[in-house]
Amino acid sequence: MKEEKIIKVPNGYFMLFLSLVLICGGIYGFVTFDMVFVVAVIIGIFLLPGFFLVNPNTSKVLLLFGKYVGTVKDNGFFWANPFYTKRKISLRASNFDSERVKVNDKLGNPIMISTILVWRVQDTFKAAFDVDNFENFVRVQSDAAVRKLASLYPYDNFADEGLDEDITLRASVNEVSEALEQELSERLAMAGIEVLEARIGYLAYAQEIANAMLKRQQATAIVAARHKIVEGAVSMVEMALDELSKKNIIDLDEDRKATMVSNLMVILCSDKDATPVVNTGTLT
Image (cartoon, rainbow, N blue to C red; front, side):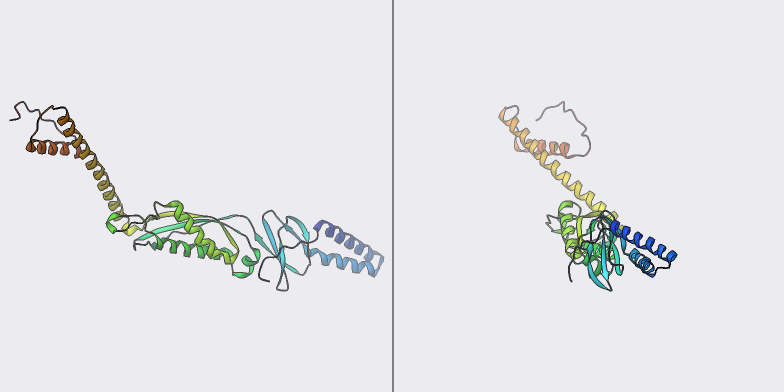
């Protein structure tokens, strides 16, 4: 037997009624000294350990002297062989928030990362017998999966690294979550665990490099902003020269064009407001 087997067991209310009848008859036998009724009460008491409840989204795994008999997933009050060992396994969705672990990303940068996992038992046989403790198995494999995932992707995509990655841990939330979910599904399948959702719960650089990486990100953002400013300034200067030339407002030689371009670029690219100077003389 290497797979889950769903079984049906007798209704517990009927067997409870039968047990009560046998016990009451046995009590009457003690009074009348009738040995037949004494045997009846013994049988009635023997039947009592066979009763059990199955609550919603739970199951009972039944064993007979170490041999797997089957799993009861129906909800209600039931009776089974009193010699059966009954193990309860929850089928409810469980939420697991792993501890923050320090790992190295694809570039070797130390980062702190944790995962949030939503899972439930799908195969009670595998959960009960293929692993020692399926709940601890989920915790250990979740840590292993998130460590492996962090080593496959960089935390962020920096141009100076010469790395052109489409997927990063910080920016590609959906892609990383799908990869993590697939990795966990493969790891937890042997324990009969179904992964409902997996995603990164916490992500940050490790404390020893956090300040340096923050400055690096700020510098990258400043360079990108300056690049956009220069592009816009060049376009504006080019447009100004074209408009002046088309409308014949002023005839500028190459030296004056160079001076005008220089002044406009300084004004447009400066991070401070320019101070205007009024020229009251001539251009000659």
